[in-house]
Image (cartoon, rainbow, N blue to C red; front, top):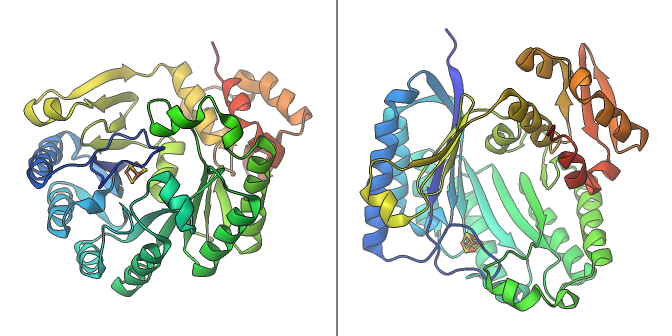
Length: 381
Ligand code: SF4
């Protein structure tokens, strides 16, 4: 019998220093803290394997934080723990996030040899002044060296993260940034607008002074420039903020948007197994010292599952398939969401596309521009 597919996320909550805009669960740490965490993480990974032996692991993603602040040996040890305890498919996508300045050629070789086959590099900007404003630990030259080392080490699937609407950024400087990244020809580019998150230094600085940030019109122009230039350069937009060369979408992220099953290990990591969502505790000491670390256990009702199916699926440019919906929920998508779909189709914010036997609903470009509003209208209560 074919095994069910599972994705594994591993959270590494350490960074060299905190970026000024970041509200992720991450902080600097000393060597002994890292060691304690890796020990506990390996224990959790091994411990959970019995409950998940019916699954085949199709994607693994080490995220953070900055996973590459751990030594190559530590990262290899964690990945081995997964290989030893789980059935990992032969062509599994195994990604790791990396910050320039935390991974030299030797470490990248070690990671490639250990089995990592996709690297996601956080660049954000090619301009050193902008990197300094963001509080990044690296310069553009360090990124370039890291990228070249990664290629030399054998990574042939690389993502670059970019940010727009940064303090002091103009459309011209963002355009130059985009061109430089395109010229490197990474397989994947994630491009997000800066969001000012509460509790960060940027919140203190900019929440009450939006005039210090690029205005809405410039933000929109950057967003349009991203779409236009990446499409011209042969990238496909497969999700609102994610572009790839044909066939090189991030399989792991697609699992989240398609509501596949995933298990998160490490502090704060989220999981969806069957129809149960839960996450691990986000307190470091509680995670290290306790055996009961799962919390917020929520068995989703069918209504919640349908809602998620719609608003997560519509993030993908391919959209949502009416036949899959019916197979999963025993009801026609049009019977549940007919009115709201018709409303947005009439406004040309959604389209219906027939592909062989399948009916797909997807957002148009104009729909993607107001996607948050559209997603909210797929909530049934
Ligand atoms: S490197 Fe990433 S996770 Fe770490 S502080 Fe910066 S943005 Fe946050």
